[in-house]
Image (cartoon, rainbow, N blue to C red):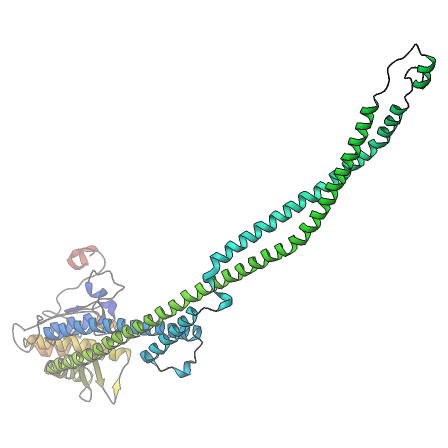
Length: 469
């Protein structure tokens, strides 16, 4: 605050170092609030309790904002859950009261649905499902056994018929063999045996076995009769199995369909049961959401009340410091009158929006030149207070090229005469004011003891401290 560099252009009272400059001043990175606090502390216009109070206000404002956002979020979650419960329970939203008053009707509706699920209907009694599964398994096995037996019987009939045909095919040769046994011929000369025996045959004396031929014929007829009986029995059994298989399969299929329907009903009932239990749980959650939202909203409201109370206290602190600003405002007004003219006026004020400098000259003026003048006048006013010992600053001030900040030449010259007037006739003035400038000051002040140094960029010996800083 004891000096302003040229890059600031003297456009804002809280700008002492330009952000574009290469200075390492921490003032470049401070917020306007902290800069104002620093200024007030330096001129003795702030109380430590006010500073502490303002920090508490900032912290509580952050907490209040967070609580308000949390309340909105919880209210949104509760509203979304409420709408889902109303939709799934198929209720009319217009019949429900707002807030927590709707929780109990929603909970009772969910419990009523759960009680409805507990009732058992005869056609969907899933308690007998194990017995029904056992019956279905028995019916299935019975139908499968009938089908297997029928397949076996159906496959046996062609075999029997083939065997009968083979046996019937053997009958002619067996019949011929029997006839030949009754009237045998000589196998050598084909002469009937009776004749050969009567006349005598010297070639053969071996006769056919008549009993064996008859036995073979009888056995063949017996086998044919037996196979015919088996064939009739198999066909009868096939008809019986075919008649029994159809109802057995129908019963097994019917039991399977009933089991499938009961399993689907059981699954649907289980899903509905869990969904309904979840609805009851969601109704409880809705109540918790609403309670927490109300608590957070109350916290946010209480914080608003606390913040307003502390803001009133902070305003009271600022009111207590009004005398400081009244004093610096008088100096500021006097400097403005000296620099601009007796018809002008200046005022320094502090409100909730910060520090305000105003110049009255036929109305409130605000131009680039006036804004630069305001800053220079404020610095001089603060220095005047420092001369009186009213600040925590030494009576010292450095302005870097104020003429370059759109300051008119006439006003620029008046600035030097003003400060010269503050010196009076004392050998040792109570302040030190340094102006670095490339614009020539008034002639009467462009000599010792007011002109202290002439510097230049080249050669190096002409620079400040004779080097490139």
